[in-house]
Every structure is written in structure tokens, then in C-alpha cells.
Image (cartoon, rainbow, N blue to C red; front, side):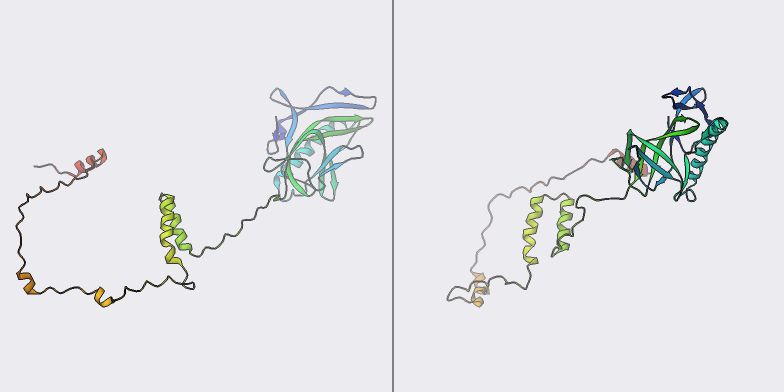
Length: 295
């Protein structure tokens, strides 16, 4: 079970399990949380915290990370979580203060109060997009799932064992691949291209669109280039005047014309097919509702 930092931590009771002796000088006391008759491990999800140094290596090649509360004046969640941690320390301190020196896990630094946690081989790191990471850089913010495993007793001192189970950090955005949107080539006639795009969107077949493009090509030829070739000259002995001249018909010519009677049977008139679409049920109901009863 993971306790979110917005929960009321005072509902839980801190329970100390039976001590485990690892050597003559080191004894470990596991810590559990008790709520409604059940015991849970002390696993907490933190608010957004600042890490000034990232992941560091100690003299013994152990990986640690310092989390700072320097943004507590801007983030009330940090203040509340910090008070929860102080309450955990006070509970342990009040129990062992007469026998041991209980070392606080909160330290004053140049970056306000900080808590140092260890990372194990099972600690997993992610960014905001759930992509796995291998490191945490300095000067970054993140959320962490942390675990208070227990207490180490060494001679007359008590130390808290905090570990990071998971981290989700905010990292600056980096673009590894070429991501520019290249400028498109400006076409000579964008209005015509819009016309063809509209034809395609309306479902006109591509072959018909291409044919329309070919038909429109002469209208888009620039006047700066050579024009179309001139028409061929007329045949010898002809002129435009005689070519386009229509012969005149005189009244005397019409007198000699005899009209013949049409003896062929007249063809019956063609039947025109009428297209008819039956009305829908809604149209019939609408029409009937408008009819007035006959008195």
C-alpha cells in the first residue's frame, strides 16, 4: 500500500517490529504502520521535491539522493509533508531518547532542509511520459515513492533507513531527431490548387481531377513566354471574305420550289418516363397532420 502525501498520516500508528541483529555492533528494527487492525509497510508518495545534486555516489559506492524542501513557501503540499516527516522523527525520538542518540534524517543545507535517501538495484526511474531513465540530473524536480524500512542501531546511535522505490522526474525536453517543419514550396496558383483539393474532398475521382488540371493548363501559362503558333494561311485563291460569305436567296427562286406532301405515317409520340420516389413515413405523417377535417 502506498500512502499519498495528501492523506492524514496521523491516522496511522508507527509499530516497531522485533529487532534483528546483524553483527555485534549493528541491529536493525523494522518499522510498520498499523491501521484498523492491519499492518502496512511505510511507503509514501512525496509531493514535487527538488533535487539539487541528482544521484550521487558515496565513499562506499552507494547511490544516494538529497531531496530539498526549498519550495515549501510556494507549495503547501511540501509544508504538510515536511510536518509528517517531523512527526515520524518525534515519535522515534521520544521512544529512544533516554537510551540512544536519535539522528535526524532532515538536515539543514544551502538548499533549505533536505532528506537523504538511498537507491537500490531495484529502484526504477521514469520521466513524466513513463519513459525509463538511467540517471537523475542535478537541479530537477520530481515525485518520489519512498520507503522507511526501519532503524539501524549502532552502539549508542540510531539512524533511519530511507530508500527510493521509484522516481518520476521532470526533465528538460530534448529533440534527438530532426523535428523542423520544412517550409512548403509556394505554388504559382494556390487558388487553383485549392480548387483541386476541394474536388478531391468532394469525392471526385483522381482521374477526373487530373483531366481538369490538364484542361486548366493553358489558362495558367505565363504571358512572358512564347505564345501559341499562328494559324496556317488560307488556301490560294480564297479569302476570308468569300469564305465567310453566305449566298443570297431571291424571291424568284422560291416560286419554283414545290412542296411535297408527307405520305409517311406519323410516329406515335414518345412516352416520357417519370421518376417517382415514394414518400417516407415521416413525410406522410407530416402531410396528414396538416389536413383539416371536412365538415
